[in-house]
Image 1 (cartoon, rainbow, N blue to C red):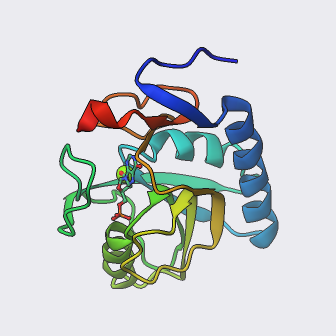
Image 2 (cartoon, protein in one colour):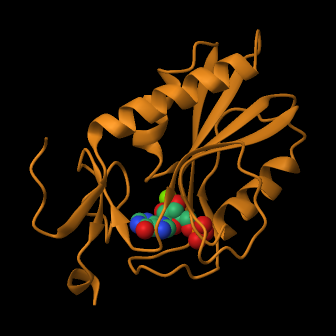
Length: 181
Ligand code: IMP
Ligand code: MG
């Protein structure tokens, strides 16, 4: 097992557990969409790592695109204000869209993204979230694919950051509160 970072108090999901779960999610997505091509959109920057693994587990014709939004700044609490910093390159109209999100917390980010994409007349929109926190949900989001339920703690790794750090940890762990206190 990969050695634990000193700023991480405990590992929630190991590299092996994540790999296994992402493979299962990809297989499920492929079997739910026989003969479809999908436009997988990830929300930069956190979900880029999840998306990279997820698309390799989806045995379908898949196109990848990226959006960037801001809602967090460098703190650990959602601001509720979501701004599109980078939009998709591909046209969404008529496409089967799958949004790959790293973590669903308040849901405000996804709610905004979904309504923005819905306005462009896709054939369908689904959401795959690697992690879901249930504690602070403010928006009613229907997640089609969920990797893991996540405790209400601030976590890092596998794409998730605190102030742009720790994204490259291969596992997901709880950040020691004294780091962001
Ligand atoms: P929401 O709008 O509150 O659902 O925020 C979702 C976004 O907040 C995610 O895409 C993450 O970038 C970030 N986020 C939420 N919880 C955590 C966490 O525990 N660690 C790191 N980032 C988080
Ligand atoms: Mg994010």
